[in-house]
Image 1 (cartoon, one colour):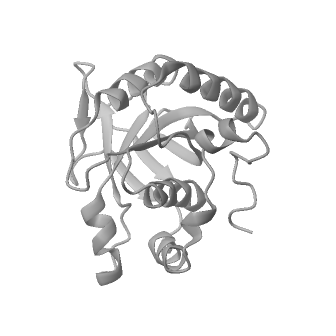
Image 2 (cartoon, rainbow, N blue to C red):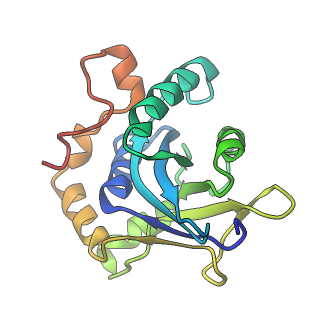
Length: 203
């Protein structure tokens, strides 16, 4: 268990995170993944996601407020915080930031198989040119030594989009500038009338 879990992300959860990163493409951004693990622990289903911050992403008080509100809302739906998403400020930066590792560490205390996803800008840029169905993000999981390791294309740890057409739909949304409509927790804290659940984003 834990070492070789498969991860499947629902299309809307995936879209929100990528659109969030595109909207704030010159900033580091982050978000959390909501999901559940299978009874045998072999797989983790990521059902939803919440874009968090695009400005002071390392600040603890806003993060703690956000996590409490998110946990309370999704607990009623039978979902738990099952991972973390991060996009670096620099396009060519593929290092896992300290804030990502620290937040991931926090989440694994409650959900040991937590996934840590890092946006891969090169994959995102290559999307229009190819027919790649794989997510435009890299998957990190905790290894036996409790450190974060990048999961390669080999091995049991895999990340896939639940709907095979996920990247095609993503391209449509990018072309129609749907990313302009995404709201994150930063926006909500500035103006509480803004819906951090993005419940109307895909309607």
